Length: 153
Image (tube, rainbow, N blue to C red; front, side, top):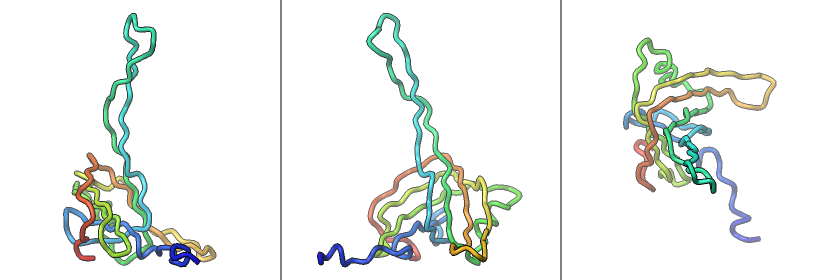
């Protein structure tokens, strides 16, 4: 048996997304992150007299909302942030943590604020865990550094 075949698959605790608000201590580890993306509008321009094709020109850049999902915890920071009467935008740091607890990738969401929060939903008869999710709107994504320690982890 080859060493690669005998190595166990990574567990959820070995790979996670650790989140901090405005560079503070970690406030949670998430097992699912979706929506991390950038879209660039493409405008086609048919130049007069040029019948061989059209020019494709870059347009406005938009960023998808990012959704984080995790098992329910006793931390209420995301609910409190989303349920606040005055929504405060904050920079959010996302660390993709490897098995050695170091960040493989780090992204910053600038001027982020909660777009929606959904609380625990569970079915006693189901085999899945109760989860909560937070959808975050933001003004842009910045990739920061490379392999580094995660504060507080």
